[in-house]
Length: 191
Image (cartoon, rainbow, N blue to C red; front, side, top):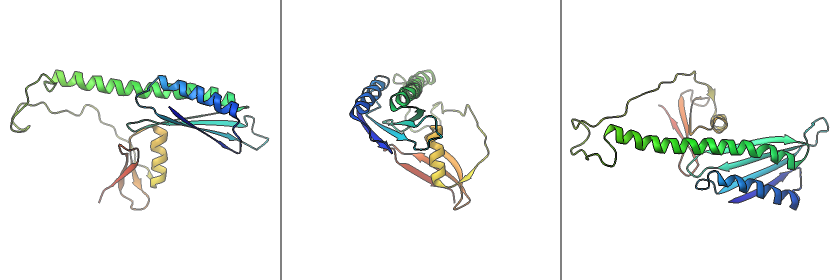
């Protein structure tokens, strides 16, 4: 696992770098097949009124899309890192659990519906073959928010979604921002 360590308003010493590399690399045991890189950013606040002068943010891109991001503040960089690591591990376990549940559930559902690996392959298309099509099992309603693309991107990352529906401030129309396989973003705008 590649660990990139940066400092803002703070020179990261070799001791802090070594400690951070060990702690962050240890999180790789949770989801090694999807995590290959981690960015660690230490920031020192120069404001004397701020009690916890050091903050640490860990950002881990997940291979098939998604992002783990967590931050914490403390009086020293070691403590800030110690506080952020459990948050990162919790998020990684959650993502791994969702990935594994989704994989196992889809195989189980395919076998139950007759579309599994042992089911006969229908000839002549779906219509009239008796193939079971997926049904809508959940509906959600929410009020749309007016924002620009950058705000939608930030909101999508904070929520951990792969897509985000919003009303564009530029066009005034519904738009969908989505994460592509290479971790870039795509935008769908309605006419």
